[in-house]
Length: 278
Image (spheres, rainbow, N blue to C red):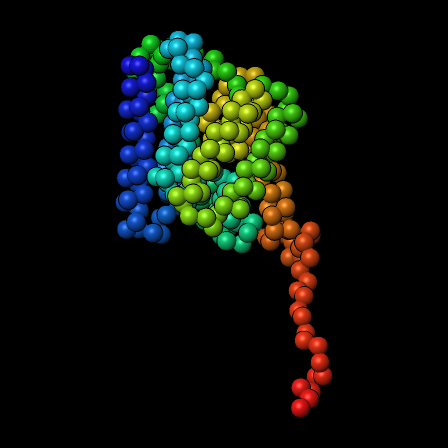
């Protein structure tokens, strides 16, 4: 329980940081892209600690899967509430670009700061573990350089898994985007938790290039290129397929709808064109 108390303090600190950045930037909307930095930092920092609880807490602290996935759901729900439209997910930023909702420069800035936030989260988490506040963190600190990769299958199988999970995630997200946040945020948190649980024996279904970079790219077992194929190319491919299935084409690339007919059917009342006969 003391380990969970220390983790709770860590989670609260990450949430407060993201909330402060969001509050401060309300006065400077031109720097709103920094919200993506805070969002990515909070998400990766919290998920690193969740991963610690999964890797160590289940056998060292007696914490079962029910506890760990409940914590994951709460983290994802809190992230959705605190960060709002700042997803901390490069695929969602690229999705807006492909839908003609953003230009190239804001897109590049957002993606860059998302990876910067993820990298900073790694540094903060490593320092936090080095404090060895609990036995769980002491063990994690010893294991830090020998972390277990989340990619437990072949590169091709992993690419397919991330692609399918991302495809399903974005299809649901596109259908929910006009729903009120009170409905959308909890449903997305449930969906992400479910996909993570379902794919835990394959890739863990991160569906987020900056998140996967923070959680598994530094772990041995695969090369950087192989991780990129699975977690970056797989996620982007799934997102693009979801957009094509949802709207019929990719607006940034194809003007013509590739799937759905754009013909409008207008019903003309039967009768003489000259008007009614009296």
